[in-house]
Length: 96
Image (tube, rainbow, N blue to C red; front, side, top):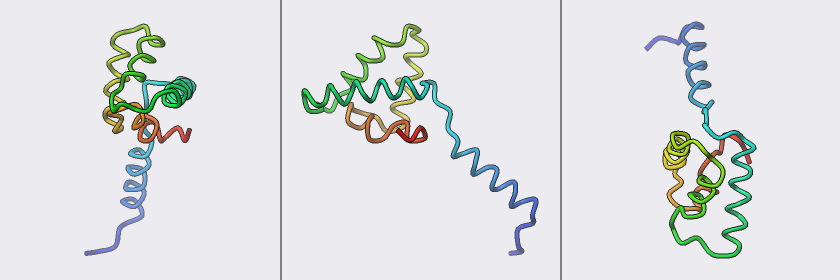
């Protein structure tokens, strides 16, 4: 195979950068609030392998049902299948 041209390298790099940049429906401040809420909840009681605390935060902090559903999907797509996994797997792009 031949070498990549300057143009194809630039296109490839641009594509990789686009893949790295993820857009979330929660703002960074909201994620920080969610994480703080989860940390406090999990200090009181160990994770029971559910999303009960995450779900409670969503209900308490997001008024729009469509946006709630978006957040739920986003969390599952990031590997958040229970409260402790939300802390460990989700919103890594925000570097919280």
